[in-house]
Image (cartoon, rainbow, N blue to C red; front, side, top):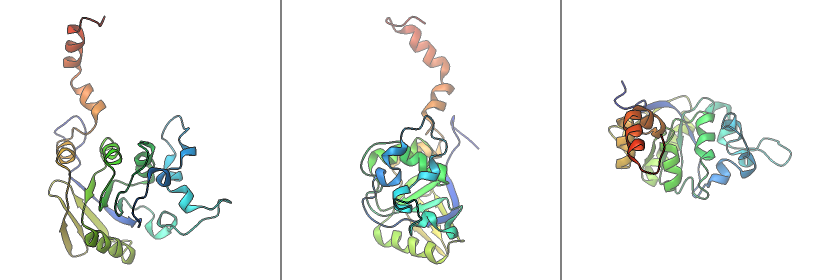
Amino acid sequence: MSRGPADTVKRVTGTGIPVRGDDIDTDQIIPARFLKVVTFDGLGQFAFFDQRFDEDDEPLEHPFNENRFEGASVLAVNANFGCGSSREHAPQALMRWGIDAIVGESFADIFAGNCLALGIPTVVADHDTVTDLQDFIDENPDAEVTVDVANETVTFGDRTVAVEVDDAQHTALVEGVWDTTALLRSNADAVEETAHSLPYTDV
């Protein structure tokens, strides 16, 4: 049940996909030449494109190319994921590939903010925990992983581990106020009242 203008995101459950390596930047997540799109529709097929295909578009070894991870919605990554440019296309591409939550050692601030704007939690765990999660997913690609945003835990197999969720992100997701457009629409009367009160507007 939603408390805010957007859906609450208290828990995400799905199969996982591991992408290993530190400092994976937004240009690796979605190469710059794919940013010319008019809408974000269809960006999912280009996620990690240059890591997934060679110059002749022949597939390379990459988790996003592996059939066993098809349909996965929980991405497990390492440190400083999403660094580099501030392009919002990066989380858009991941979301449209099917990612609903990301567990990592750390995230670039702007990338995490862009994920939050889409309702995608970016929860943080230590290196050993993330490595254990990635190994578990590798060995059990059909097993569910649960990211509990409200209680700040991740469950995989018979383990439930503590993770960190940024305070502002926690509030926004759990209370359903992460979608700023929906928030503005839900406060349309207040927005209009403020607009009328401004001497430099003519509404």
